[in-house]
Image (tube, rainbow, N blue to C red; front, side, top):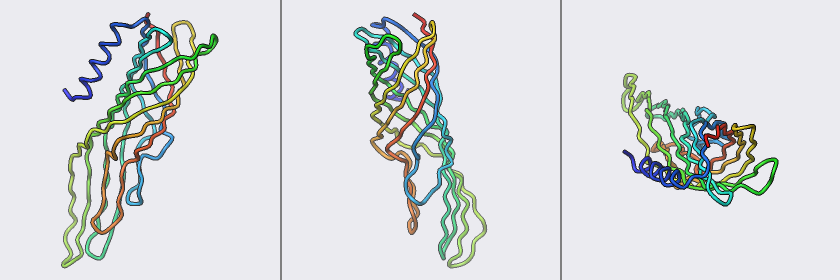
Length: 213
């Protein structure tokens, strides 16, 4: 089991033991920022993000939320010189695991909240590259497929939103900002442009949960 999954499991178990309330549901939305920087590639990532969510109520208006958020990542790039031409593209599955401490402000009708915490991210995919060499002699078309397993990224996430209650149903529109400790995806050509994943990320999401207790 990966270290980030073990950390998430231990974190959840500790919070459940002291929980005053428990809500389960899902969270989904979209990314408001570009996921790539640099002139070397164009993003073909899907903007959506979705996954299950668990919220645990704690004393003194505090709560803890743990999510497992899926994204579909991808990019395309092309480069040509006098010596060769390469067209590449990656498709990857990305999972974020936010672990958030939340504080609800003391309002009666609605429940504004702020949140912050830690989030690890894992990305796995594959790159398909089509290459032709021109120099010193022309070569036949060549296709290469390689699996990618980018290093785990670690991020700090902060945000805020409002929670509405309809019986046991909970709706929580939220803005979240994440800063990653590294650029998980990095690429370049030796004599051409480069690209990398954006270390700053803004998401707009909606949580839909059912209060179990």
